[in-house]
Length: 595
Image (cartoon, rainbow, N blue to C red; front, side, top):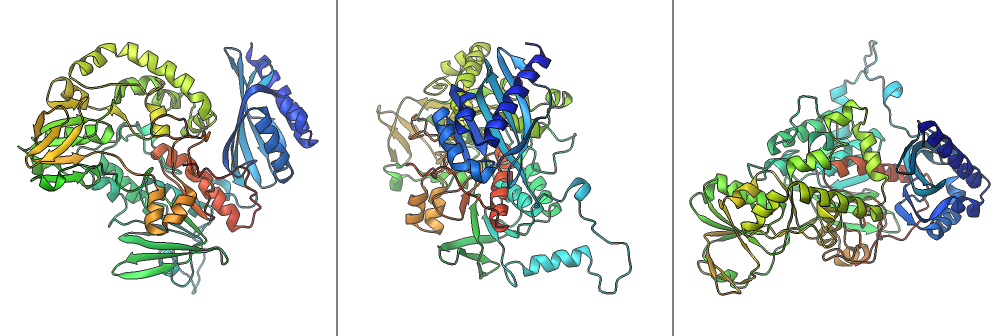
């Protein structure tokens, strides 16, 4: 199909869809979709992050949401494309509340996937570009307050003379990105960081840590990394960038501040948040509370029978900072995912004798392979073609999670063939490999369970060469005074044990700070409900509890890697801003509180 023909097809479909919605003919609108169809909506229609699967699901949503959404102004924003019989086109539209953008994909003239996303709120747009603030006015004024004086006044008053509308618990990349979005929307917010400086969550990790994802994937909102920035960012450099960013974006960022308790008053619609800061307890009264403590919650330790008898040190990877004190010692690393590999390398570089204990198979992908095959739209070449980070983000978001496994399986079939010799060598070293229960590889593991994978940035060659030893296929029976006894009767001498055993769900942090009852009401975070081990059903269609309304009023979760934090921080901020301004936000879809 020629591109102009593809554009005509897309325009005809969009026109018919717009007419059906304008006349509230829900039947005509759903008839424009294939039976096997998907509509992923980010706030525009549902005030939720919601994927509708099948025509009946789309029909029900439109019946419920069309009157409040009142969509108009549908138009294509460029030429459509066609590949393998699938027409793709991008478009813009408006709703009663704001402006939106989206993507449609057609097969045989009917819609296979539709993506809609709210871009901004009418009357509450970010002050940028031609609407940027004036700043300093060029005139003499005896009542002048300088920028620094105004900034100090804001910092000193927020949380004391006047309350923030929102408090964000966690000042890492997620909290900082969300803080920046809220700031640009004019939402008074405080970001709480337990460490002494912004970026310390990176600085305090082991010395060899470096981002596994490339720079084009890791930009923060508003301020991208400069062109000279390295492809893979070292941890301390990342920490410095976050510290600079928090200052330049003028965030109300409280360091050395720990939330000790929080409770919600449903009648007053207020949270009471107790914060220990600078030796005193400060009580904040926000209307919204966001947990941005990473993708996960508290550290998860596995039972180790006989731990009391072990004469050495046992620590979780969250407590591990520097391998140099283990130089010359025998160290067992329990866990063979990303942290297990990174910690093992750091120990090896520090002169320790390292043995990795692999409790289950791991998906491993070489970094350069992933860069070439999986990050193509986040690359210098893509940028040269005009694919900005924003465009790449929208492309990724426009794909329903239910359709990802098919593409990921094809990708990893190709990766396994390409790097077959590498995988043979790794397996020969005793390392157990897998590519997921359905052979869909690393990305689906990341979304489903957040565990069980490693992007190889150096550890695999050490394993292949025997520099890092591996014990796989045996279970730990108990610890002994001098090491570990396995269920096959073998023993491993160890002076120390580092448990790279992952983290609990973020809702367990809610249990610690709010209550067990609220945590149970909200349910676990992350995962799709795919049914694979570690990702219990039922099917969610989108990551569980992330970036959207939860079963607890005015409680939100925000997190993920740098890319997810960058992208979804916009939608968390838009939801909170709409509520602050009294914009009606009728949420369609039950909260994802499945266990």
